[in-house]
Length: 128
Image (cartoon, rainbow, N blue to C red; front, side):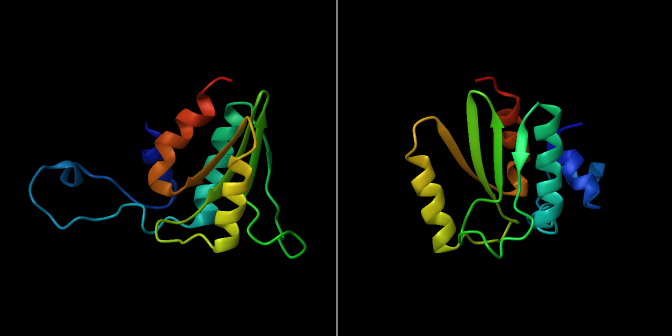
């Protein structure tokens, strides 16, 4: 089962054979109902499977505005990832942080949405 199929099934989205036909139909975003917290839980599960240490600030009350949702570390790699639901927008503070962190040598930064789950898994599987 692909990462996207796992994520969708966890979120109660079913795929049937009819969804896979080539007939013209109204485009449907299967990831539209995936909540950010469910997506985050899926990303963290894959990170743990692939040996990443992770940090997520549960309460951002005393954290700098815009700090990325996840910090993942598996030497020699360090990832900062902002997670958004399909229609979520990054704030200017989030954009500034990712741009600033991207300038640091060896640091990887990402904006991930549920539709990106297969690419996320590839990033997490990759060696250093």
